[in-house]
Image (cartoon, rainbow, N blue to C red; front, top):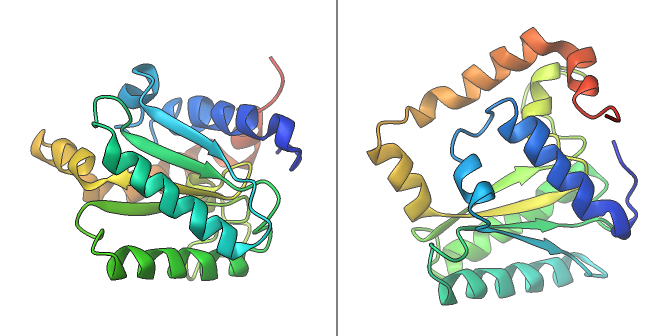
Length: 183
């Protein structure tokens, strides 16, 4: 995976989205906003966790001020902080509590991606963890309306995690690494 160099951070994360998330169809509803240019990529410049929360608040307001047809979702990439997964989880829990406190819980939700992502109870080296392993720590702000549209279209969103884990078990660590090898 790439370095934490801010100059390459967004490119590495965009490659991850294209090759892993869309390429492996880990998120069946990522392709349309990507192709349509409706994903907002934001590179955090925060010096600490409080700064990341402030940036998240700005992104929530940005989404509220723009139609879903303009900006559907935001990926907040944090290259300089949150290298420790436990620290990242602490920030994620604080961010989710903030959504609740602000009354945004029915409007937005957060998805989490981290280089050391580990599902609760999973071994650290389990390939299934790769479904949520990104090059750098990220907070993904999703609109509930986007999720509702997918559900209304008949997608079985509850089956996605198990399907993704099975896909990664079939791919294996070597296959995962090959996704990111130079062309």
